[in-house]
Image (cartoon, rainbow, N blue to C red):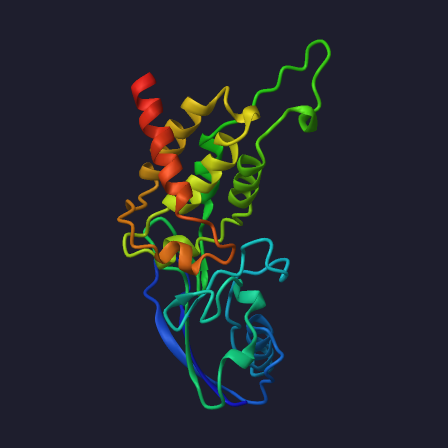
Amino acid sequence: MKLFLKIWRQANANSKGKFTEYTLDGIEGDMSFLEMLDILNEDLIAKSEEPVEFDHDCREGICGMCSLQINGEPHGPDRGVTTCQLHMRRFSDGDTIVIEPFRAKAFPVIKDLIVDRSAFDRIQQAGGYVSVNTSGNTIDANAIPIEKENADNAFNAAACIGCGACVAACKNASAMLFTSAKVSQYALLPQGQVEATDRVMSMVKQMDLEGFGNCTNTGACEVECPKGISLENIARMNREYYAASIKG
């Protein structure tokens, strides 16, 4: 398979970036998208050219590091997969593929296709911790009765890997889906109730401070999320926030 690549190259956050064109031949359909980029970088290194910088870690769809905008879509044309799980059989011989970093004010470019997503870390840190009374005879977590629907919804919310596809897909660069998933995984469980009011207020405040936009219910975030995080979490976070505001 012969492919024509247009890749965003940018030396650092303060430099002006541009698209650079590359031609790559001999790509097989069973290769992952990142393996294709590996081959490109091997060719560039062999020519004494600087390789393309991109984020990756586990390459198993778990870590959320492989965040690329591919032909205008976060993680590419497939659904329910991360970039590392996207296979080249989704493309055809002679295709032109445009590859760029996630675009958001809160995700500044570090170099080439790598963006700084530490804003997500600061939102989670603003949520604080879950307090557990360890004095006396403690109760095992699995001994606390929890309705199955709540347990399932909390588990589904906790599946968020923080890749940032929701932000990249949103016309407002909103982080509401990510933040609501992190709020929901505790709001649905008894262990998360002690700090529930402070948690949602602090996380939403930090989200706004980071420069993310607001949600206007377009739904692109849920469509592009590789873990299928539901918009229901945003509605839940809004309820939690309004309730906390009244208490405050």
